[in-house]
Length: 418
Image (cartoon, rainbow, N blue to C red; front, side):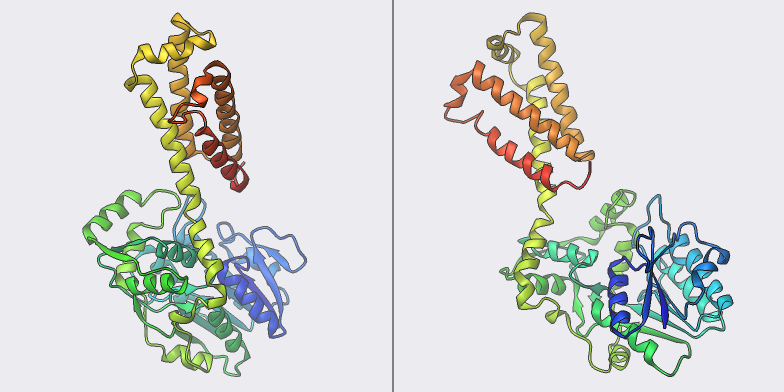
């Protein structure tokens, strides 16, 4: 069949495309920017009317909606991405005579009251009202090596101390992305094309704290110490971080975590034809070392940027307020800066250091790292010439810049932003 997979470049969408292609289907990939013959440009922020889908659905037998977001931002809202665009797609598919529709929803959408769940449920309910054969699949937390949530939880598991929101007792039953994709493929093989709503979960139910411990053990770490973070404190943090771009802790994600994410596995067993894999088998021994390195690397940008920002900000504070003024001005004399010029240079340098510290936290990018690299190298060269005694000072105030330069080189080579 000709199958349009919307969200084909997403974590779940890629697995679906692979599974459907293995079954011999011709897969057309719905993506934001189409660059290949098998890709179709779609935009869920704009394609909210059936007419927008008419031409795209010509010759399509099956439509799979795998587009979803966990957190809203200025460019994507739950209402448009989860409700308006999918409903327009479903209506257009009915008009175009599409044989079957597969909707990737979420476990908890049936009764959840967060905007995330409400928007998913609205699209599900609309699809159920249409006279089109369909499958509404509601998976639990989906695990895969490249999944954003899986990467986050594996990184969290590497910490020697596990902060557990509310004690870490919510129940979860994660499902493998490959098994979810297999269920989609199997549903299209079935002769029965009647509507169905399936809650799909993995084979093992665990508490949140057990999930982190399982990932940590599978990656070869010794057991971590677990510390309960009071629920009221997590709630306060969720309120503060609710509007912070990219924050995974929001009021809605905290509500969803507290509610848990689990169900009986019998439905998944029937859909797969076998019991689903449990979380203890998600990380195979052959992959453990690579995933361990990947998880640890997730902390590197934040740690490096935090250390660098601390250096700039503390230097600015010391230069402007803490270190004796006479001592600071005396340090400038060997380079020929004295009097009012020295005072101006001191405060200008402190202001520059402060600005670089703030930019390191808020506006990272290759241009910033390159500018800092040149600046630190210049500082080091001037001091080495004008104040050579600092080269053999027992505290190594100049030679320690070698570590800062190495840090900046790492940031420069790994930074994706210009």
